[in-house]
Image 1 (tube, rainbow, N blue to C red):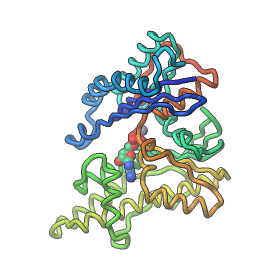
Image 2 (image 1 turned 120 degrees about the vertical axis):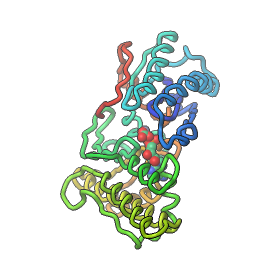
Image 3 (image 1 turned 90 degrees about the vertical axis):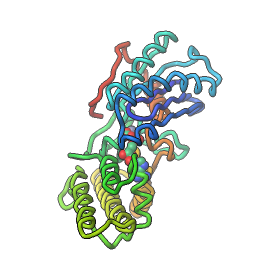
Length: 335
Ligand code: KG4
Ligand code: ZN
């Protein structure tokens, strides 16, 4: 079975075709990052308009790449939420329009379920059950995964998501958008011993996170140095390093706890922040120490993409699921 996947929840237009026998057979992505960078963050109205411009040409592109006509597809899966309402509407209405024209079923997919199962697109993919750490710009969650659609939330952020904290720290350090990769790049030149930021909510039991205090800590450290004179590049690198170490350490501590609490030996890490190299190194080390294993999506599939949506759609289609023809666009939607 072949499923077209459409992702338009935020600032990437992602389209892909997943074949349940051959795997991923086409994949295309248009990032709006450069367009939003000028404004220091995603501008929702610009995002919707750009999805409208790019989505149909990208669908044409993946069909050509796979040498298929639309009516040779078995279903269309689209991101139904959570995300920006206008952006979601573009994907949902296009998916429904094409599904009617080609007379095939349509499936609305949860964006975080896409991230959660993105490592399944890799050759070395994990078996169920596993613990998943979902770390993106909008979410930080630990989930116990027993199978398709069988998810138990273990813990989540009570305030900012990890990616959001990276983006805000980047702004304070006068770095561009999106902040995560730039903070990580700067942190590589930082002195890990100069500042020590707190590891929020690690001094008490539980699997919830809080990252808003780290933002305040970054701001006060930056301000203090500015007031005392000027903020040098080395100062900024040292702050970036302290910030990254604190976020990574906190995530590692909670993953360790989640593995212990569930007794599971497999850890999946997905979402934009899973691209972070220092986080990967630390988690590889920690899992190896307890005869466990960590699984990640390839770099391209850490951030938003159509392949993960096509994959989830294909699995749900195989499981016999079909949505009715009601269009769904749900900005806030728990997993
Ligand atoms: O999953 P994603 O593409 O979009 C959402 O669903 O939110 O995640 C984007 C987030 C941004 O906050 C970005 O700063 C962060 O992932 N990110 C990183 C890295 N690459 C992307 N954070 C830390 N280190 C990275 N290397
Ligand atoms: Zn995402």
